[in-house]
Structures are given as structure tokens and as C-alpha cells.
Length: 311
Length: 293
Image 1 (cartoon, each protein chain N blue to C red):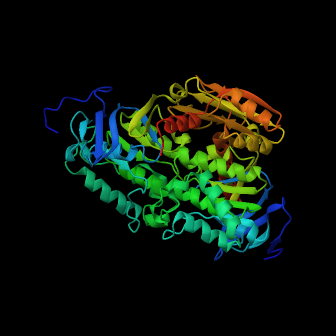
Image 2: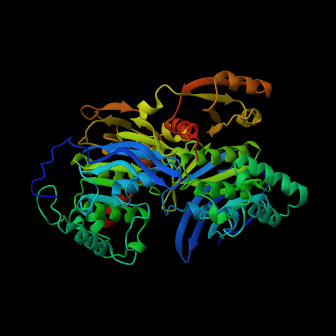
């Protein structure tokens, strides 16, 4: 960045922006005219089935590959080495050196990012994550390979956050961690957002999606939904079936070619109408209560991904 | 080992009693009871290192119990999907099924018919000639599940069948699991995801090898003591954690609501967090008492 760069003001401009971004590999269009914005302080979830184009889009945003058409801007400019210094990235594999200690891992990433980068407060030295996190400091001399997954995730977060990045990109950040550990990791993510960073989270998990301010759903390379979880679910409904013996109801629905999901001892049929379900149950000789209930986000997501052709 | 060992059990009474599993003296599962009834799905939930895999390995007889009892059918009546790949990379989809079926004594027409039916139901019929190594994560897990289902086992044991699988494939996997339970199998599966555990009839939550909570999801949610609040900022009292941009706060004695907070019904995620906080608090109190004494 040059010395004449305009001062960054909260809310403007987007930290990351894709405008009609398109990425083709030969005949395959992996990302098809996608618009995406991540604003300061915002936690955006990027969702999609496998093959929907999420990973390719993230690689474009990180500047690892260049879009075939359209535009990707990071901090208002095309991705470059300079923009890389303002990014924090936690891949699913965490990107840590397993045979180095926690302190060595943090020192390595700290030095890599401190080069030529001034942090948000104008200082040049990255914060020492061990000084501010006693739990991390307690395992500072242990090799990362000996830590539990939850602890390794905390180290990866600390490494990605130490240079106080303006944009944080996280791939399934709390996968495999118990609920209390997950709550602690989200606390860290939210604290980064509240101090002005933008966060882009890719996930397959509804509990993670629930933590985001806004969700972008991709299918077949395109954005098929963008909004809050409630916006995206909208007035969508699912048929709920409560029968004396759920297994009989399940068999009757399967015989009619209707996909039923088991929840406890009730069934949910997201892809069919109430009458269709009632008819299938009657034909199977099953007595059951059939009612329309609001769809879950999971059900909505599967419908969106399936309608686009799916994987 | 005291009551040690295991033995065949009649259909419908599978499970473990006071099970402890240890590897070289390190306890992985400590004193766990679990009932896995026929015709239902039972979920074992916990994070990495909670003891889920050890419990399931003991269920299928892959690791002997240090203490306690395992009730399971004979090995030919068990279907097991282990954590990890679970399919042979160098065999095609059809060959994987054939190999697995043969190992369980199936052959000829019965094997072909069951294999064809499972290929159709998993949506893998078009990929029958593809090598295991060439499958996507979701397809691989569907094949591994089909292999575990092929011999129509009385007990189906699934170790994280949906980890790394996208929601579309996850829904398909759950449909197969529900189908097996509907046909009468006793199903026990491990997962790290509570939204998935909510689909089971019974949930066992493990925390570092110890049972943390056990019950039907509704009971666990209904059994959360005290009160749960939702507020836009962090309250200065009570145990609190994030839920999106907002905060959840738990008050054991149901004391005054934090400013700006509204009371909410807990969900399973809250129930597990409260139980974990409670356990940590008691462990800390125990350590203090120990030092005082």
C-alpha cells in the first residue's frame, strides 16, 4: 500500500468483494458470475454442497488463482502480496507445523506476517498471543502434534489473528470440537469482528451457519441464496409426520418414493406436499398426524442445492 | 477385568454396562452405560478425544473392555463403519460391495440383488465401475454405509458416518440409516454434531471418556436447570457464551435477568454447554476442597 492510501473508515468499502466473478477450468465453469461482499465487522458464511464452487471462490478471494472473468477486490484492490499481509487464513488442515512447539509455530507465523505490515493501530510489532492467552501459554512449550484438536484449533486461530488481519477466512473453524470449545472459538471470531475485521467462514454445518450474520449459498457455481438464515428459510414449510409406529410410516413413504428424515420418533418430509404425504400414508394403511411446520435451514439448504442440479 | 468379556445377546438388548476401555493404562472410556435398542437410532456425541471411537470399537469387539460388559450379537450380525476411509481404494464400487458381502457369507443371487438395491438407493448405480479411490467424500461414505448394511445386520455401528460430508449427501446417508432402523436394526452412531444427534431417539454425550449427559434430546433440553437468557451484549453476571452476534447466559438459580435480556428455551447445544460448565465448576471446587483438606 502506498502512503497516499485513503484512511480506512468503518463500513466502507467492502473488505472483500467479488463482482460477477467467473472461474473456468477448460469446459467447466466452477464459479459462475458470483457477487460476494464482506464488510468490516461482518461474519459471512459461505455454504454449498461439494462441487458447488466454494473452494474455488475462496481461492480467488485469497488471490491464489485469478478469475477468468469479472473482478475480485481485496481492500479495494486486486489481490497481491500486499493484500496477503492483511489476511488471516485458517484452513481445514490448520496449517500448523506439528513437530514445532506452540511458541515456535506462533513465532514463525508472526515473523512471516510482521514483515512490511503495519497493524490497525499503526504499530509494527505483532501482538504476542501467548501474553494475552494464559491457556495457550500453559501449552506454549508443547509440540503441536501432542495437543488435542481443540487446542490445535486455538493455536491456529492465534497464529492467524496475531497480525490483526482485516479479513479472516476460516474453513469449518470449529469442526470436531465439543460445544464448550466451539463456544470459546466463536468468542475469538466474534471479538475479531467486533474490532472491525470481516470474517468469511465456509462450512457444511448448520451450527456454524447459525453463528454467521449473513449466509451466501452456492450451488453449481452460482449464488442461489444470500441473506440471514431467517431470510433464506422464508416461509418454506416441511411436512411433519407423527405416527404410532414411525417405522411403518417411513416404509409407506419410501414405497411412495418420498424421502423422509427421521427426527427422534417423528418424520419430516421436506420435498413433498401435505396431501401427497397423507395419500402415501393412507395407501400404506398407516394412521398418522400430518402437519405443515416451518422448514429448518438444513432442509432449505438441501432443497436449494438439489434444485440447482446438485452434485 | 472383573465381570469382563462379552457375549452374544438376543436381538433388542444390545449395549454396554459400566464399560471402561483403556489403552496401555490410559483410560479412553470410563464407566459408560448405553442401551442400543432395536428399531431406533442412538447417538454418541462428543468432540475429538471424547471416547466415541473407543466405545464403538468395544461395541463391535475390536477392543476388549478393561471392565464392564458389552452386549452384542455374533460378528456376522454386526455392520460396522469405522472412522476413516472404510472402502478399498483399489477396488471398484461393485467389487467393494461384492468383497464385503462375501466376507459375510453372502453370494450368488442374494448378494447381487442386495448389492443392486443398495447401489440404487445410494445413487451409486452409475458409479459401480469407479474405483474407491476416485469417489468424492460423500460417495465414499455412502459406499461404506452400503457395505455395512449389505448383510442386513441386527446391530449397525457407525463411527462418524457424516464427517466431512456435505448436507445433501448427509441427508441421503441419514435416509439409509433411518431405513435400517425402520427395518428393525439397532443403530448406534458417533457424531461431533449436535444438530445431527437431535435426530436420534437417545443421545449419550461423552466428555473426555466420561458420560456427561444421556437421554432423549427433548428430555435433555427440558432438564436444563436454572434459566437461559438471550441478550445483545455480554452480561456481567452468570455464565455466558456467544450465539451469533448475541449472547446466551445461563443462571443456575434463575436470578434476575441481565439488562436487555429475554428468557429463551434452551436447545441441545445449550444443554451440553451447561453440563460441561457445571462439571468444570464442580471439578474446580473439588480441587479447592482437596487443597484445603
